[in-house]
Length: 195
Image (tube, rainbow, N blue to C red; front, side, top):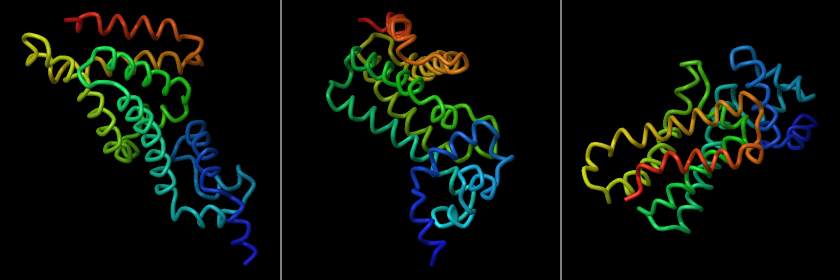
C-alpha cells in the first residue's frame, strides 16, 4: 500500500518531463526503468505504476509531444483561411517557434537517429507532415503549373524549416533570439509562392 501512495505522488507528467531530458542526455538504450527512477529519486515500482516498460514510456513521450504540436497548429489554422499564403507563413513560423521553444520535445520527435526508436514516431510524424502538406498544397493549387510542385514542395519547405530549427537547437538559440531571422527565412521560402 505504501508503494502505491508513493506512485500516486509521482505524476505521469513529471515522469515524462524528466524522462525526456534523460533520453536526450543518455540515449534510449543506456537507460532502464530503474535508472530513470533512480535519477528521479523514486523506486522503479513507482514508474511501473504509470508505465509497463521503457518502450511504453518513450512512446508516451512521442505521442504527447506530437499532440501538443498538432493542437497548436490546428488551433492556429482554425483562425485562418485555407489556401491563404499568410496562413502558410503563420503555420511555418509556429512550427519554428514550437521547435525552438521546446527543443527537447523536437529532438525526440524529429531528430532521433536510432531506427528502432524512429518507428515510435512514424505515425505522428506523418500526421504532422500531412497537415503541413495540406496547407502548402492549398496555396500551390492556386498557381499555374501547380501539379509539378504539389508533392515535392511540402517536403522541401519542411526540410528547410527542419534545418533552421536543428541548427538553432544545436547552438542553443531560443525562438526570441532568432525571431527576426525566422520571419525572414519563412518570407524567403514563401516568396516563390506569391501569385
